[in-house]
Image 1 (cartoon, one colour):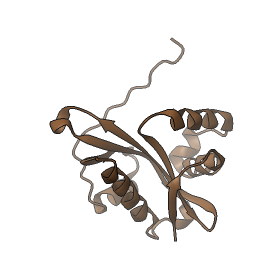
Image 2 (cartoon, rainbow, N blue to C red):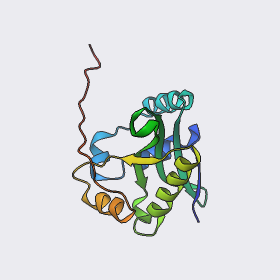
Image 3 (cartoon, rainbow, N blue to C red):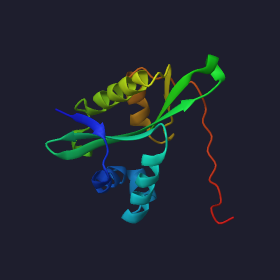
Length: 151
């Protein structure tokens, strides 16, 4: 049984391990824990930003970030953005991802959101199939641009 809760600072090492537990994360995530701890501290002070973990037998086995966005479009709809969805490799295909998405949707509904959205890297074909099975539609094309942090 997975228990979903807001992450604690002490969970950060386990969350980073989940982020690094795939081919993309192994390359783009680092082991520099102070950076992640500083980001966690900043997130805790940002309104509408939650880092959630799934815990089983006292261990963090899944995580996602949920950010609430209030806007004027779609008749002033509030939406939820889900990011960094990860499930322990040992528990994939066991329903944990489905439970994770249900938890995110419940939190978004409770926060007054009428839409939940996410992006998925083009190379994550298994993840895209999962999201489609969960009822998500690939309705938009996303764009990203890295910004120069030295300027």
